[in-house]
Image (cartoon, rainbow, N blue to C red):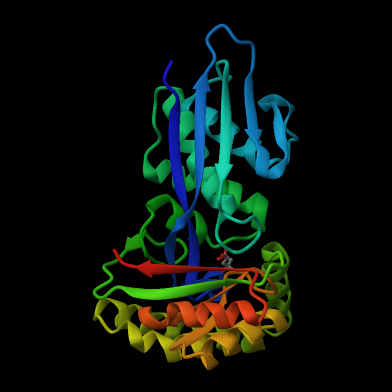
Length: 312
Ligand code: MEV
């Protein structure tokens, strides 16, 4: 019996994180160097549908997964959407090269790959819209009150200009550009930072709305620069966005150290990316300087770096 396989890429937020939860635009791009692969192997005559995800220590029949498990939520979501009562005998294996809790969208990528592979196994592949909507439901388990940007960029695997509640907008990157992604090695507590920003906003709405609006303007300018073929203009916009995120309290000395090292080594701009207080930062670089900047970031404490070219 053939297996049913689906993959989903990682992602980074280029600009607009946190403000996007409050209705401002943000830009996210896929990172194809890392990915999740979900493989469903039918087991005719078998008794159970088993889930194996070695990276997170899961190897169990699916109905033994705890009720709060995102994997279980995704599997129940496929069954509900397709109107099936249970899963036929089979094995779902999830393999991932996306670091967990690093701001690279590993949770969203697991959901998207799983939803596609399992729905194909059930003989009714979900549409992108269905995958995106179900992955968003699972994101709420991971992140509390997410904007939906992570599941959207991972589902469509293209750069997205995202505004919460609006139709998905993918866009053309007129001139490709290069980013170096630097991992602090600290888990990014996205649920916590999103929650803390919410508490801050509830306490001082005017101050936070000002910061969100500033980040929104930077994102609109970044979008214009990318579609006009002037990605070099992103550098100062990224630097300014990092300052606002620091002001919001979601940076971390390790992120700041990598940002500074990247800038000193010649990056055109650098900022934290995603929820913050850990996870990754990104630097916009001239391609011929990528190796030197990546080395400088490693010397400043990055446990891993990925150089990625944004195009589409
Ligand atoms: C997380 O990748 C991006 C945040 O803006 C949260 C969200 O949009 O759901 C921090």
